[in-house]
Length: 112
Image (cartoon, rainbow, N blue to C red; front, side, top):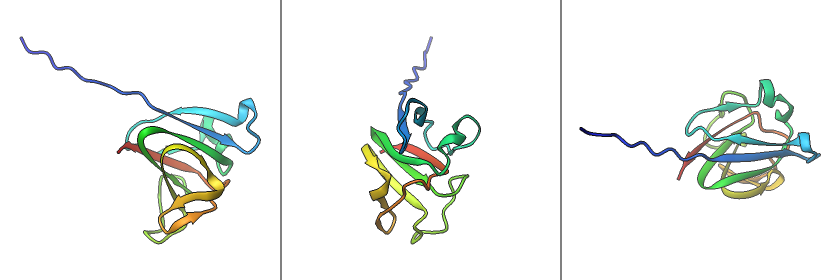
């Protein structure tokens, strides 16, 4: 008899608005390579994210538009963050550091 063992790692990001009140921060489960839009129960974060904590071993891409869409490789509508705590006012973008404060509408994460 053979058994297949599947290991599942759970990871979360924490996103906060500038207000950083209890309703301003939220812990969001990371589903690898799936787009998460700030709609429905997360709509209060749409265009309001000021701080993000990305789990170690992950890279997360934050998009200005819903649907995890970007205008292209030289666009300033994407912030790419690795494990750690980030101030979105000085976030790494595809073309260098940029002010991504209050711009995020969706994100995707994957293990590095």
